[in-house]
Image (cartoon, rainbow, N blue to C red):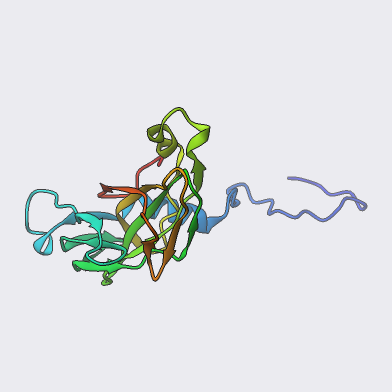
Length: 188
């Protein structure tokens, strides 16, 4: 039993032996767990055997697209994501000779969303554009979402990329590539 002297400050913590205190912000931990637990199951209502990816790609006229409808598991609940073209990319300007990644994800029963960039790095700081892209991080997975894929983009050496009306505009939109995901990668 712990004793308190009359001039000791009041204890700010419970003296109970089994009390557990939050060491980190709970919302961040919950979203980190969701990042690896929320995943693409398959197509056709979860009955299609092999794993199916959402086939994220450049949009038909703007933004990005989810070409294949998929069944996803979000917070333990099975849901679907429809095929959707021309998903909006967040408006903004990416400077010349830069690299970044944009996450494409879906919430329960929604068509999908594009968030990002996670960070923007200067290609001049790296020996190659591949190394610059490797230094880019994905943005955090939005709460209650499942990662479907991401877009990696490298802006031209002398031209800014302007994301206006939710698509890359100007003389060139840079070089974009797409990676398919079934869940959020551990360290990307």
